[in-house]
Image (cartoon, rainbow, N blue to C red; front, side, top):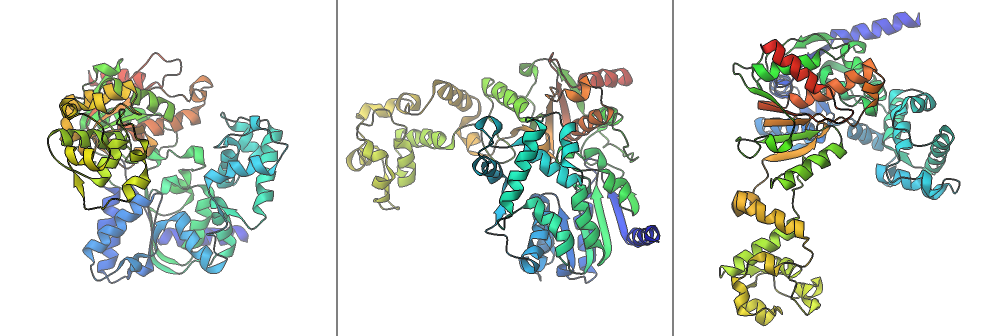
Length: 537
């Protein structure tokens, strides 16, 4: 009887659900926003009756901003149900259970709680980002026994006894009326009544965990129309408990496939499909490439890659942070200006401000108070340290500007007049390491000050960080630092790695560069390249 009830429930979901499979660059986001969302708004559905749930704040904000631009009669408040799943649950959790603002435990606090709450756990068992708690959180998201999940993990750091003790300590601490992000999802299933909706849109559906899907099933009970969008081949959050099968198989619905990419041409498409062949249980979704060729090329040395000569934007991508750091060191040695996906640049912003300030002064121009204050912090010869302190500068009017003479008379600049003829690296030596000076000199020679004031054209980061983005040129470093999949020949782990690299290579619009190494656990993307060459011939 219970089984029949479940079948009937799924049947009802199937009738009101459309699953949109969007391979890389095929316009999944465009379809969700321009066709689905705007289509229902044009039909008169009020935005308060629409929930747009995505995996990232960026995707949510993009959808809301585009809708607001097209439907000016609405306000930001009308789109109050455009959120990540955690924020959506939090909103109704606050309304119906209690306000978690003062009792929410973020990830930075969790490991500290373990250390300070249990004297039996020594410093040897403690790390700032505690891996044991990460595994515990993964098990909760997978709806599985933490002990079983822990035994399977290749990066476990503690004995099973220590692992269980940490969990017990952490849960005991939370009983003091504290909750964490996963608690909020867990408790929402039983304690929150989600409002009825006309439309529910779920973006990046392949990235949700079994626990999160339990919440989604509950939300769907009072929804008239459901749209799920994603790509199981880009499901790269298995490490966090995500399972693409919920999107592909376990959640019923009518399947729609977007069949033409607007991102890359035939060469990159062909190479990406070779990688995709190794993905177990990949759902069939053949799609066409753009009518252009493109470039796929393999290198053995970073300095051989034409990063400085090919026009356009660049993604330089590593599998994990350790390989990303290697790439950043190579880029600095090559004198490249780069950033990461969070907006951080390859040089210290205060140092750069000081360089610009001194350059301005030597040209006979004036500085405002803030620029002068920054510059003073790096002048080696400045004898009176009081002029480096915030207290001194806070007493000066904000509107006042100072040339070289004014800085000497009013701000304690004790440099001779002939110093104006000296380059910045002879004056700004305090808190400048020699390698930093060398790097800035190379940058200025290569780019000029104007380009360095603009955002970098090169992003160096992990493949995970740029998911959803694209660049004219992409460089993939094939070093995996994740050897278990290939040493143990685990088909499913290898499949997960294939998904990561498939996601990486499909960020490229024009050129794709593969940097292979002789590292012991080199990802076999180099072998994939050889297959690509053979098939092209």
